[in-house]
Length: 601
Image (cartoon, rainbow, N blue to C red):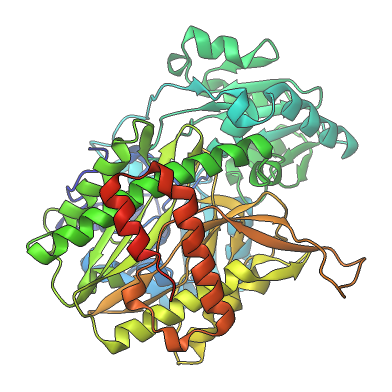
């Protein structure tokens, strides 16, 4: 099994660790310390060594941070984790704080009149610290870059990961690394920049057509890189991660050096050097400025090209989704036959689903720990089942299963919510509204230049009309055999990045009733040009989505009368496409199940 069911953190350990941290802060003359869920690469996914927030507080979410002050320790979490955090931290010692509604600077000023707040400049971006400093201006609180105070007290901190790197075939990458480097270097020259510093692991992997094994589930390599304006790259990563074949793959214009050489190398550059203010650690620009080297703030040059998938990447993603869709149908067929027997647990569901994916003989890993939420656990948006939390799937309820896979040709992410017996009319109405939101995103056409925030309301409109909503974005970017969460593209209220052809996103509206049930439906979609329409403006370029995921929805939960004719047509056409695309790949039993599941409504 890729997935395990042990508990990653113990809330009971938090108070003693918090007390130890406060003792260190007092000895250093600090009134507080920032504890992010971050590493020196500023990616979303961190290794065990960098799980400082989890180690200190018990909170295991993929986003958030803590601010430790003398009398209060705030754990800042967004809407995805407000149920989860209450069960993972000692509420007598840690205070959940709704973020971003509550701004960190405002919260600190409300808790403390004066003092110096420490932070590790390798774990925060320049943008973030700049905003904090602006928010604290005029108060008695100041920020100071210091060494990491959590590391001071973490006696058994794990060693840095040493996963092996490996080449990603050019046929799947869709473009040689040399061509990528040349294209990006030309952009640096046009901007008058001599080099760009790359800190995001998936940027390194995309640019060099390599993959790694330094964090669970996502095939990324930890390291830094400097892309020079002549298309040379200096890669800073531990040499033990590279065998002879992978070193040869890098080629003569990529120089491999140890991570310890990164900071000294920064000091030798001639400016201006591009640094991404939002994704690079503040320490990078601090080191450059200390050496008198001009910093040119600009986007990581890999992020947008990486987000806009080429023909080779899209072909691989389509194949991966057909393979994964067939595995999902085999699983749902099994689930429908197994649920009436009773006694099925959330862990049983996770284990069975991974088994069906393994049966493809192509599974590299799962793309994240499967969320198998029965009944009230489905309302915990990023629920991870453990031996302690494992719940029997009760009759007359809902089961939410959010899962994905990493195949060499693509990354998948899919959520389906299924009926267990009769969950009731209210649950069916909520499910139908969520489905209407997914259909709205799937069907929309929009003028080129709009961003994810412009489309996000479409996924919520049916819920809003019923006084309902969900506390997460509608969609995140997805990599091609890379990170299952990828920027900069999103469908979200806060996303200002224009959607471009080739961007892959999730389409996953939901609805959650704490203590009762959760509903989420998710397909992956890719931006493509929209054909001209009769009577449309010839000069107005429009975009639309192609659906990548093909797996039936649970028709037992659809209130057909709530669907408009256009929505009904979309659902029937989608299910017809499921049968056409997956039929040849299914076992006889699953094929028969799929025909019934895809019957027209």
